[in-house]
Amino acid sequence: MKDHRIRQLFEEEAMDDSRDQASVDDAALMRAIRGGVKRGQASSRRRVYQYGGAGAAGLALATGIFIAAGGGDYLTRAAIVPAPIVEEAPQPTGEWGEYEAFRASASNDPILKSALDKGEVEPLDVTVEGDDYTLQLYGAVRDSRKLSLLYEISGEDVRSTAISLGKLTDASGKQIGSQEDRQDFFVNGSLYGYARFDLDASAGADLEAFKLEAPVYTRTRNPGYDKGSEQLTVLEAEVKVDPGSSGVFEENLAAGQTLTVAGQVLHVEQALITPKSGYIVLVPDEGNDKSISRLIGAKLTVTKDGETVESAGGLGVGVIEMLTEDSSRFIFTFNRTPLPKNPDSVAFSIDGIEALDREEQQLIANTETAKVLQAPDEKMTVNVNPGADGTEVVQFGYPIDASKYFEGNDPPSTMFLWETFTDADGVKHPLETFGAGSGRSINQILPNSKSTTSTYQYASGDYPQPLTFKIMSYPKEISEYAEIRLK
Image 1 (tube, rainbow, N blue to C red):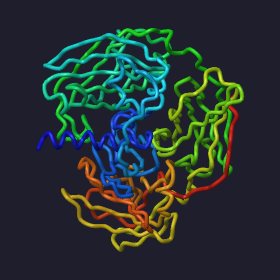
Image 2: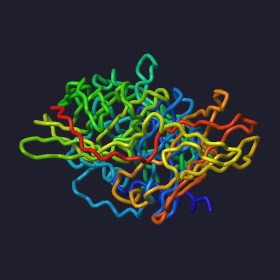
Image 3: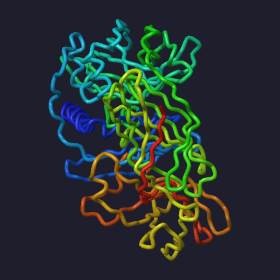
């Protein structure tokens, strides 16, 4: 039975990665987020989107945008994960030599696969042992912002283990990197795979050495996060890398430019182009009269010697970091395709935004009479029911165009609320996604769905009515193309 469950977990992970990074591993949510959150999983092979509360932070949906709120204590992934299709066997396109055992795990990552095809992996020869497990590092692929380590883990019952929540520290013990994602496969008695780390901007460019701390957990759907995932050991390795292997051909393009769409201004805080990825950060202007929750159809276009490379946004590429309820940053890591070195031109574009007027953000409802008084759509409904452990569960229903969730890799948001609500006397109260910590999926969108729901819970009480909730994301689109030339 245990072997069957472990095989099932590997099959599910393979299916999750089969849409060319349409979904991302747990720790990928830590991109620009100061802590761990959970991922929504589509476990059916039907065309279904499922989402719900999970782990230390709830789960909402906002098309591959991950929301961090409350300074890391209330972290929510607002992302939708498509039901996966069966993974096809990777097709060899290059000789990988000693790295051949990594083909199954690396073939779905375009940046890593390109490095392996072109022989651009920096070789490593590091082996450490601990608690009957052996970790061997074979190679590294990196730029100044991301580091991928190719590894092998062997040991007793290693098939039922996984690395998660790894980190990198410098000689002083300061953390300079956090694990974003992991993918591995059981091959000839060992786990072969890669772990990708987000590097601290101040350390990545001149990185020469670091200490890897790699916690090993029992393999579950979300190792290191699930309640049933036990930490078995922490493998530590001292690693030296060539400082000249990153930073070469990287370009920090001029920041300070602005992108205007639908009358809303976004400031370019950062534009870094490397042969591995493009890193773009935009900050909404404080004077905007709308709250933007998503940039639709984000795309990076890079030209070199008359040839154009386009790297699309969507799931797993865009992050929105919520610093406060009124302050955010859009962070993009365009990593779907390698970029040319020393490009002639670079442009960032979007097809529109999802946004609400400030007044539209106020969702006002009388939860005692089950009546919505103010909402972005007049068809919105509210339902309240008793919950467990002295809580009440409030569920908002609202109309959607389900077809948009099944087209391409950039589906709309679903409604996500801020972490507090306000009663009629102006007193704020905590709000959390329903089922936080349960790991179960709550809601789903089917191809013929006319509506969906957003479900939250709060402590039972006699609250002065009506209650006011603040909407942080909602599928209200404004189509308007906008482009900014970065080079």
